[in-house]
Length: 311
Length: 311
Image (cartoon, rainbow over all chains, first blue to last red; front, side, top):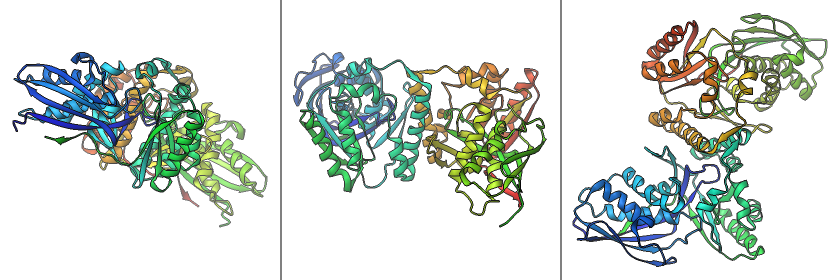
């Protein structure tokens, strides 16, 4: 209690997870943002600086994902002090790894630890969503929920979201490959058609239901069948040079599935531990064949959500 | 072995289950068709007659759902004898209770018991799908799979379908109310728009994933939230006079959800055992207020699939 400053680590996350556009996400805590929030006498929210892989974040709180999320928290709680915020970015912007979500979540988790009475996580989720909307132009919650709660997370509803953690089969790993290019979430949303063909809708819902069901029952074949996005990926894959080859390489090396992380360009695969190294090597090589270097991480699932690291 | 005749009971089923258009179904074995298949020296398939609630079924095998399903089985197995088929219909046609699926499933289950080597159920599923297509004009499998396997069933894929039985919370009942009118599945499919709005797609997928997840975890609130069809029901509800009032009555009496069974006009609700009587009474009264009498059944879930009843 009466802490003056708190630092939260908020992990990267993979949104959509192939078949859960805007509703599924999983945390990837091999990388993340560290957000330090300090009590200030001056009321309101103040961005004091940014460090790490991104340094030119907007300083105006309402244009900054962490700042906007904290403003939402201030509106809710009306504390008798203000928040000064420093963001150490570990997640590149425009990577499709939930960087804006992580800054928003890190900020509210750190600030929450400074409040006389901590808010429940669902309230933090709603505040962080306000922050995310600054970056993406839409109130989607898949990255926010995964980053905040950890694990593989389903979110149902936007105004009164319900968050459900879904189990992941033992031994499952996520392979994350980030090619050195960036895409704007806003742009990647803008190219999507406003309608889904009815037969693609049926196919996608079957895959989604099969994927969820497979996760609950350790049914790897059903997960393999389910991890196929027939609605969003076909529209976005041309934004990522080499995507088709990367996906082929992942599946050939034994991945259960491979798709775009969020709006891209990062690509993720699910693979059992014993196949993960070969899957990663195949994906990295395929990007290289297209002239693109990449960063990569392999994490066992489920991966933890945001947490206080320094109070 | 060497039986000369066999009778199978094949239950009614509720297709779609609100959020699983063409992919989810559950068996309702309070009613069903009884199909008797007899070996005949004459090769091929012969419809000898129909009794029960429908008596004027087509006699040409390829225009009869049971006959067409058996023809598919004959094509697959090439037995050195033929099949004579009698269908005792318990399920009204055009009711939305999977009547054509039940006749097709009953036929292949009965015939399978006459084969020197029984086929696996997935092969029977594929044969029965051929029969169902005669009636509905589309190869959907939700009723077939529920009728054949029993319980709440998810089917992923059409050409090589995977069937997954999904658990249902203990104490759950289905209330089934069939107003005295009929609808053609073919017509009810024809009115559907060929596209789904992207935001409705996201909403529906969230509801579906929540429903499935709720079933695996006994999360009644998530099931309640999930059992909301925002894509198909709004397009079909006007085909059923009084539907909105029936649904309201069911929810007011404590149902977790209420929607159209298959293509309608039958309406189903899920409710815990203690609420089921009130739910049924509310639904029946609401149809009566619109001048429609109805039949009704209340069944504990899961309900059994097709089975040999007389060998």
